Length: 549
Image (cartoon, rainbow, N blue to C red; front, side):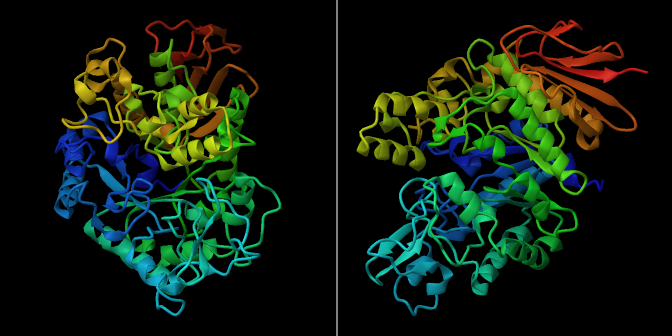
């Protein structure tokens, strides 16, 4: 395989609003990140994915951009951003930004012009349609509830929005829109940014017939009507030709609706599109017929099958990104582990999986200290627009609101948006003011300062594991082989190249489990338990073993 710097990189995602507040206004900011830059460097990561810091009305926490060329004042200034970029680069850490170009804010100048008249020069920057039978142009749903169309009385037409009504979809069929996007990308790359995480990039090419869906199911709609449109690869190849290929950068696409069978069309090394994908199949695996708030159990065999099949599908042509949580999905120790009786063990087991699996790992802020989901008692304490829409729709449908709140506690996006818990002082040391969203009440026991001094430190485990990965290229480019695909509790896989062979042995259960394999030729080199017993794995035990010759 060709060795690119982004294959060796370890990513760390910063959700800036919740990372560190430097000025007491309750909102995390760029200067707060600069304050903690040595903490980030000490962790050992190579690459920061910085969430949106552009000017925005914050209908969807910055993913509704009103000016792609400006920093939102609540995050700081352009000078602050350039200082952050400079300090990261001085420490050998790269930075990628969010590229949010499926939609803009309705307060963007383009849309304000577009809605003025049907013959406005910016009208075709967005998707406008006549209604049908007194209603919207088709029956598509928006991702956060309600129809994917909003009526505009001024011109008697509807505009398309796959997300909130304040996030109108851009019309990528218009070459002027594409050139606007490419010019903006060049602006940030010329400043020194090291690439982009591309928000819902699989949705930018629309099916121009805008036909009704036959099934009232959002995931069916996404997979069959919204994602992987007819010109998606033409657009991405044009973007690569015009912009991406001219810089030594990394791109990772967020790809709703991209299956493993389609992955290499986006990331194949001869496709000239993207470097890697955040594959979302795992993130949607526990969604029931009612969507994300209708949670179903995930069994380990299906979890393993997903990673095995994606690795096989991508092969040597493409490259995976490995992640278990981010700003849109619940905390990984709460979702895939046990955040109660075995929080340390489960958090370190999941870290072991994340950092030894084949692909570029992405750590979400707070995972390195085992931060957990939050269970606020009142809807008034929640800030996420998706959660609030779900609550309001449930209320209108006379649902059991106690059950609705339990579902929010499990799957709501604010689980991962509560502020980083730096210490046990008020608001977890995140701010000297009132935080934009409450800190998880468990901050008094779960925080960076406490973890740094603990005998069972998740943070120290991450640092040692990151150092181990960096010292052993087998974990980056070695082959991957799932050795016990059908075991209900154990995940044991091999990473091997011509120099070394490692077994990663993980017990995804609350029980001690006997290992049904002969490990006589392997020695344990790293574990989240002090003692290693060759024949079994204790609850949530993770062992890395090296073959001896």
